[in-house]
Image (cartoon, one colour):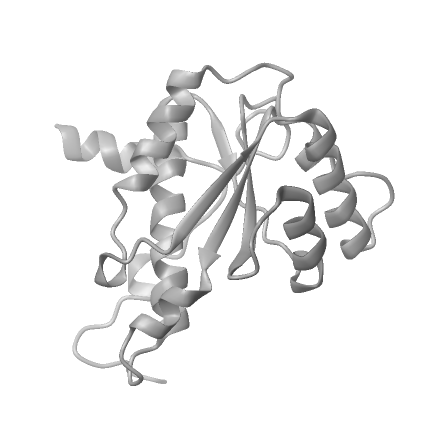
Amino acid sequence: MIDDELLELMKERWTVRKFLDRDVPEEELDKILEAGRWAPSGGNKQPWELVIIKDREKRDKVAEIYSEAMGLKGRSKRYTTPPILIAVCIDTRVRDSYPDEMPADFIVYASVGSMVQNMMLMAAELGLGLSWGTQPKRVQKELKELLDIPEHLEIPDILQLGYPDQERYSSSRKELDDFVHHDSVMVD
């Protein structure tokens, strides 16, 4: 049954931190981007812009900017070894399009999270790893200059895409009874 296959894919998807030095075919990248394009978004605003970073020097500079901000020694291999980085940008002007009583930041970030999740599932289906890389607020200016990103966009994440160079590790999840409540949340 197809729904069981989808659930299994979701269970088997994992966060890759080490990547092979192997190019990702353009047609696979296109499938991943297409999956992201069809994600749901609040009011169908699609508040995302993506910058595909394949240039080695730019990937090294992203690693340097991130590593310095995080106080790491050397450049983060998380950003230097994958063949593709994807800067996820949010168009901050979209926030103003929601009514004042709506939680605009939540809507925008949830929309972008849905887009990234679609991309992650497609990457997993293709045997690729796609990982989050949340960017500190203090690196926004440097990243925007490096990638020629206009002021109205912010860069909350830089995704890493490539073929895994590590074994899948196990992770646990809460049981449904630990977080699902019916009609109210009962506190002991």
